[in-house]
Length: 535
View (cartoon, rainbow, N blue to C red):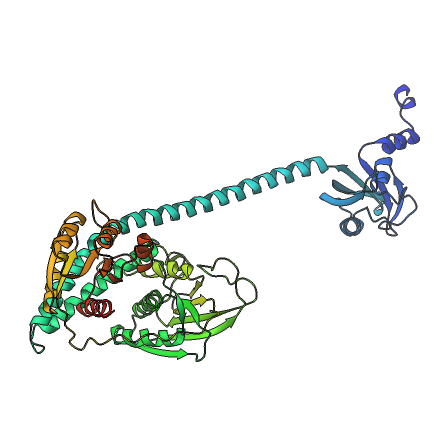
């Protein structure tokens, strides 16, 4: 009896609930009227104040949507219900809104067998939720930073690959082009000395074609490595594509039909014709090789596309984007590619041709390098069994297209007099000497700059100097400077495997009279000599 007499009264229990840090309220159902709310609950639903006597939901701070559904569920089922981490946006003491989280339980209070009231009991879990959210944000930030580091490492790796490739290309191209110059010179000389109807002529033509394709491979390597400089001028892309496509049509597999849909009156594009030819050539060859069924189709089209915002390109253009692009599309109905393959096709040396195939892996990589240098981009769309489409985007030029100058027909042109050939490669000197002698010149040779200057001083009758741009000891720039000092008006043709713009920049004010690319054919050699000696 003594314990019972000391039991707390109802008023004391209510007072304890009123001061409890937990949020406690009693809601009458089904009319949803508050019958009790402690101080913590009333504070949470500010600025409405004491909710007793008000309907649930009249306060904007009691989480009406979620809580109302919970109240009705408890009333209808007679089972308790909980809403973990109920989010409320509450007005703080200063009036500023604050995001709070509560773990809320809804308990049925029965009178007899019927649920007449629902007790709402909740406690503040804001600190816990904020801590978890902060941890999640920190983890997200770490992941984002890790992804950025990985992307940066990938870009650095790509730069290192390109730089390594550039170092390799610089050394290989010089030696390889010297070999090809010797091969093409000797084969051309053999073809010139044999009758046109000789059975050997087709074999020599095949050898020359193989050497040209090897030279194209070297140029692709140099282009990707950034060792070439564009010689841009406004060109008509449709006309340019038509010329290249007709040249390549016979090289496509016989099972492939080539269709051209070239728009007339396109805006001109500022482009290097030789590099743009390389883009078209690589895309056409790639499309033809993608078709392995008995009959297939490669379609080439040009058009203007207006843009709204950025174009999602594999190789996007840098800098300001114009409102429209001149577009070249090469589409095939071949086997297509999955996403993993399409993501790698622009990597250097990546190939899907397998062992024993023609060397590949530089074509699309060099295409990407050329387009970036031209302020353009490329997009690839492909799916297994649905073919592939490459779309090249080039910014239009502000200038009108220039017609391509026709090649001069030498018509059996022959030279006379003495020519000095300066090259550190014995085979290049021998092949060049053979060609020059076959067209009427007397030839002197020099293996280095010092020997060249001695020969030049000893033979004032020399009409012309063919000078290799890259030699040991004395560079081509030093040699041409000394030649001009000895005889200011001497014509000098610089021969190099590097791009003309790159070579000419090295010579500065001591510009040569002409430039000849290694490896060269006899017609290219004759054209340069005819032009420089006719001045």
